[in-house]
Image (cartoon, rainbow, N blue to C red; front, side, top):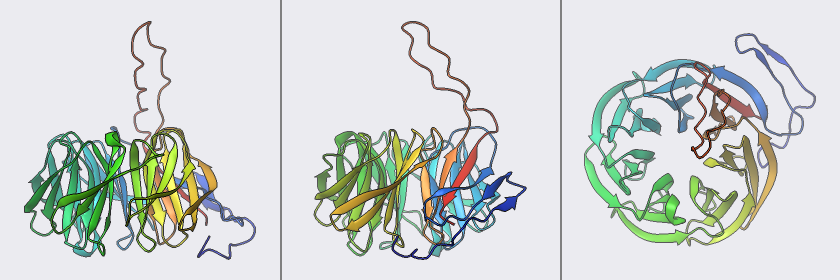
Amino acid sequence: MKTRNHWFLGALALALPSLGLLTTVRADGTYHLLREISVGGDGGWDYLSVDSAGRRLYVSHGTKVVVFDIDKDAVVGEIADTPGVHGLAVASELKRGFTSNGRENKASIVDLQTLKTLSQVDTGQNPDGMLFEPGQQEVYMFNGRGHSATVFEAGSGKVVATIPLSGKPEFAAADPQAGRVYNNIEDKNEVAVIDTKTHQVVATWPIAPGEEASGMAIDLAHHRLFLGCGNKLMVMMDSTTGKVVASVPIGEGVDANAFDPGTQLAFSSCGSGTVTIAKQEAPDKLTVVQTLTTEPRARTMTLDPKTHRIYLASARFEAQPEPAAGAPRQRPKMVPGSFKILVYGVD
């Protein structure tokens, strides 16, 4: 790894009585489980986001966002009254967060110091993905059923544009220097390229050999997008031309992607219970360096670039009964109170 050339030799076990498991230091630099943070409560989850400067982790859970101190690995609060929340976009310099509340077609503007909602903004149908674009100081809410993006000023909440999209939007990434926002259009197998000044889609790029991309991450220094695709591929795309320059195999049921500029590692988290970790060896070369075993359905993820740790949400589920003849298979029920955060790293 690029900035991790000297790893501690041997293994060190640190007792963590409050968490009930061990943390070890590895000599080989591979990712492994550091700890589990019990959260409890009921309800599903979606996006996780890290405020590396503020040392906070934000995790959607049911109708709220749970807030963690990532230096203490402890729950420190919650953001309430966010029906159907998918996640929170962080504007660290503004000390603001922006939640996508899918059930009420609104975004909440949140004070990250008090965790109180300051105001709400009307969006399109079912806001899902969310993004703070620092170049224009604007927030993008990507409306899943509305096939659009609602753009509003981060400071005032004033809506400045509604951008039609060709299909169902998923994760997005921004390049403020280029004045571009990139968004996966999952059901069209393409990336929409949005001009941040005109709020217009200026290009659509096919992602073949990838299909049904969900996760997206960006390497700003080398102008590369990393797309987690439903046909079990991670695609690396040139963010200036739209050319697909490399791809590697990943697990099944991908959701999130992340990229660590310090190590040049790209991550794809999959519901099959794995995270594929690939290194960008060159502008057109992507190599899998590890397939990390996590837990089934732990498919959403975020990364802290300061510590190089990744965070995934998980829970236990009841055994799934066999459906009656001709009946559709039902989703298994989550065991009440089993919701948790898994922390993986190389330390």
